Image (cartoon, rainbow over all chains, first blue to last red; front, side, top):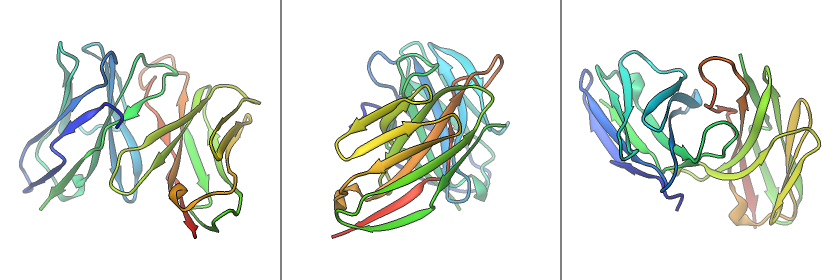
Length: 113
Length: 114
């Protein structure tokens, strides 16, 4: 158990809908990262928050957004969902950011039908 | 653009048969190279971080090494429970955005047969 908690574990929704994925980082970790894993693209970095503020963006679509709350939990919002958004979404956390090893949650499997 | 290439894509070994997995990387400046293990349907599990060429780290049957262009994950006398996908990732030194996110390779799917 990495100490990173993600909910829900599975999510099935229709195209055009909006969903929210939730992540609770390890106790004491200030950085939260979101990644998308699909069969063809592998693990892709989406976005990072550090102590409540956005620190870095990766390959995140404009339809996707995230935030980190004062208690350090984070939410990833996915809107106007398309079939191609079906993937595993992982949250990871680390104590700091640069050079610090990140610990991953068990992921949310999103299926868009 | 940072790139990570892992080889082979898949590897099947007999129990006890040692081998090495390769991770080649291209990055403007390396802050760290990370190895993870991922079991099907689970999140990646952290194994090692390497920071500079010549560095080595060991954990049980696994040993990771780093050069200026690649990293190797050596598996000595593997057991069936070592079967998993092994992922390599780099974190680059940037002056702008994207500073802390990892760039992952597509992984090596390792199967250890009893």
